[in-house]
Image (tube, rainbow, N blue to C red; front, side, top):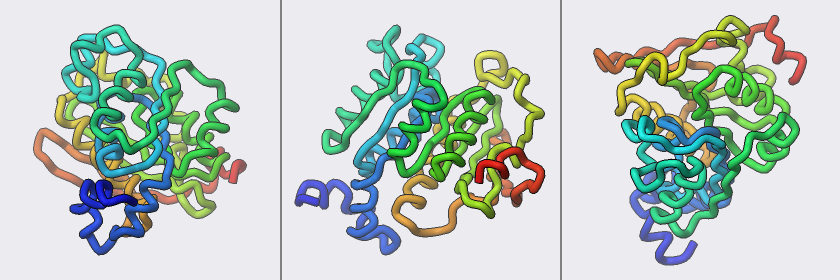
Amino acid sequence: MNDDQLLRYSRQIMLPDIDVAGQQKLQDASVLVMGLGGLGSAAAYYLAAGGVGHLVLNDFDEVDWSNLQRQIVHDESRIGINKAESARQTLQALNSDIRITTVTEKQDKQELLELVQQCNVIVDGSDNFATRYLLNEISLLAATPLVSGAAIRMEGQVSVFNATASSPCYRCLYGHSREQEDMSCSNNGVLAPLVGIIGAMQAAETIKLIAGFGETLDGRLLILDARTMAIKTLALSADPACDCRRQR
């Protein structure tokens, strides 16, 4: 790292858990952010600010007016343009040191797997179960940790799925029961700061995974009720009957 970078990240480098060695790990890392909506906006902002050297931003949707209530990586001037490209412009202006790759078209399973194999962590900021299940499958195939987040109405949740033989995966938590449920924000609403809180937690878990410190949410599900600001953490375990067992 050069002198400007040491100054930029000095408050983070001061932390004994990170230090220069941990900051260098962040600089050398690649992270896939899947979805640049509310969760992905906050997660990507803090990963860029925190010095993750390469961000892969994946979203094929376009910015519209209803997004601006919570998707803080976009602004009014970006209405109608691709969300990954909009996020790239914002994050590159925030930190010109990092490299940003955008993926603006929907990928098939093989293409997504090849992309994930080049990354250290997947951050799931998607808003539908089909994408979440696909990312879970890709995470296991690539043995790449998945940092999962979700937020709807006034409740959010975060977990880490480490893609190891002993760790639970997303299907261990939800199985097939929710594949057909319509749990989108467009149909249920969401409190604007909630996605920011959950997305920031995802960024923190990602930094911990890369720099190698602390205790992640692997094997635990953190649930936040924004109405009361109550947080509870549930223990998760791998389901021996889960379909994912065949992929490990």
